[in-house]
Amino acid sequence: MKTLPERLLFPNARISKERLEKAIHGKTIVITGASYGIGEELAMLFSGYNVHLILIARTEEKLQALANSIKANKSKCIIIAADLYQESEVDRVIEKLKSLPGGIDIFISNAGKSITRPLADSLNRYHDFTRTNSLNYLAPVKLLLAATPLLKANKGQIINISAMNVLLLPAPEWAAYQASKTAFDQWFRSNLAEWRVMGILAKTIYLPLVRTRMIAPNENYKNYPAMPPQQAAIRIARLLCSSSTCSKPWWAIFPQTGSFFGRYIWEKWSYYHLRKRNGDSI
Ligand SMILES: NC(=O)c1ccc[n+]([C@@H]2O[C@H](COP(=O)([O-])OP(=O)(O)OC[C@H]3O[C@@H](n4cnc5c(N)ncnc54)[C@H](OP(=O)(O)O)[C@@H]3O)[C@@H](O)[C@H]2O)c1
Image (cartoon, rainbow, N blue to C red):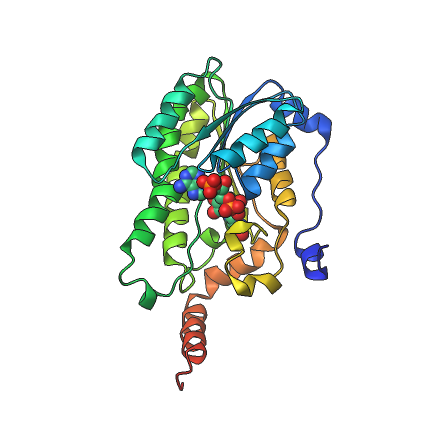
């Protein structure tokens, strides 16, 4: 049940069956990070149509269970269990994608990892940065470099599942996640026009907080307004069907405007907030 702030911030989005059918009928759709959360919801949404789903994640038994329920619907499905932290696993996924007889029509880059950790607790955790970068930035770069000729042949689409934070001023304790998501966003947007020339449409959705496994460890988020993952999936499907290259919440303009004008205030506020939280006298 959505709270009042959730109803205002995340009003129910809908997509007509006919519209989605027209956009995806007969298409081969790759979804990375399909075993849980937003990727799983998206796979379930598409499974009601005549599509060929290629689902990628680490947890094989979860992918298999999802594939079984998907095959009971209209679509065909292949699962690829792979750990995208490992470059050799990314290469194995690429070989499988290249061997698909009909190529790829739609690539949804969704697999991701989030970390919130204070700098003081990160001093011996360089691996937080290599891991977030390998999954949130380098793996999708490598996959999309390989997928580009396949998508070009089918005049396909790419969707980047990004985060609202990427559009805002950086926040304390989010360095690993924020840097990796922003790096991929920059890489992705740098290529938009070049992909367009090849006949590939590339689009980004900047999601707010979504109530999935990813945010569960953070106690604070239990009381924050968050979008249900089913609604995130519908918004991704709507972006897929539209000619727009970007989707974000209706209210994103307010924090974005604040970020544009408010760097000095934000940095001061962050400093005082951390000192107060740590019990230091100001
Ligand atoms: N939840 C939010 O508040 C939020 C907000 C903005 C943007 N996003 C973005 O939305 C995307 C999906 O997140 P979610 O909320 O749905 O999180 P989630 O429920 O934790 O799902 C993450 C997916 O990525 C897969 N994954 C994680 N590590 C992997 C690895 N090393 N190799 C292959 N697959 C891996 C997971 O599967 P396995 O564990 O089985 O590998 C899972 O299917 C992410 O890119 C995230 O940055 C989320």
